[in-house]
Length: 332
Ligand code: TYM
Image (cartoon, rainbow, N blue to C red; front, side, top):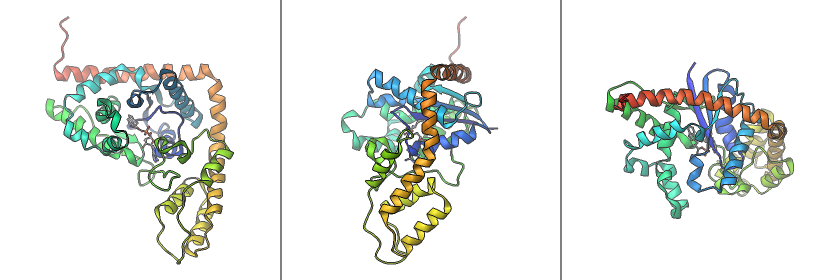
């Protein structure tokens, strides 16, 4: 049994990128490992949410975690800001995290491009907070999508740097994990890049989307021209449709559309409607369960209360020991 940690930012509702990149693995891992799954509400502060929106977003993610099947009796489910020890470890780790290496992290460079007016220190040190999240429970496996790979490398570097500096073997190395062979990248509906809320709500399918919404979004999904020669390589937007189909459709359905592509008889409209139908069948039971869990305030409260206690006990032990290693000692 290994220790597993992962989290999803509280920026609204979860989309299929979050589900297939992370949450789906959480569900299986909770049966096999010592798991800590949390809602990264401190990370979401980089975009300065309104207090009421922040609380609502945290609750939404919590409800969706539970509705998808995370079981507070099998895993430790908590809210990042409920565990202040994470912030303490983050502060300590910041002393050995260098500006140059933080500026080279791809997600930081991307944010500098996309939001030049809000390049705050929290954004720069985002991977340090993420490292604290992970190593505070001494995790070795971190179920995440492909976009988080560089952050895991930073977590290994910072953990090793601590070990080397104090000549200890305290933090183990965490690695990104997925049950499939490769880390997942769920494409967005804009024909390029990954599914993410920041590319616009219409480019992502959310676990809460109803059938009509899914159909409408899929209809508008960007596609290139139809193929004109047999067995041509697929342009990115078409490959994206096949990637989405891979997540929700049957092998027969995928094989059918693959052969229509090869023969140049593919009709993108039909393919998009098939994906919409299969996405809806996939999401429908979760969507239903979201409504039920959302109404059960007592269940939600109980889940986070046990989670907070368990996560704090584990985090407090690590921080206490790390502080002793560093040389913080009590005078009484
Ligand atoms: P976030 O909130 O952007 O995304 C949460 C998880 O969903 C995955 N994901 C995707 N996977 C595949 N395709 C996509 N289109 C897609 N979009 C999102 C992400 O890879 C991630 O696993 N920094 C993290 C949250 C975090 C964290 C941590 C994760 C904070 N501390 C510690 C693991 C361990 C983030 O912003 O993810």
